[in-house]
Length: 92
Image 1 (cartoon, rainbow, N blue to C red):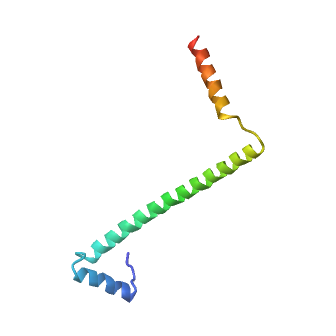
Image 2: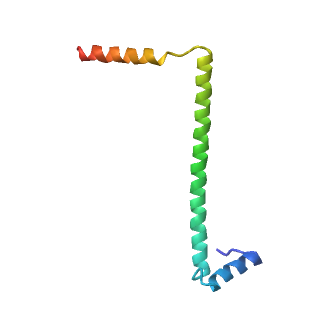
């Protein structure tokens, strides 16, 4: 595969190689592709996080609507019911 570089890109590559930053153009491009792969991986992770944020926000809105519609159970009642259930299980 041959890749055409713009003149400024070619100058950049040659400059970095001549400065000794990279041993060869191939070394520079290998690192560039490694960084591109890492960037794409980070982008996918970012998109997953954004989707999770959307899902959490939706659940918060649903919870707020449940509260507004008075469709909830007091936390103390839930814990009392759980304690009673545990007690009845211990007695078996």
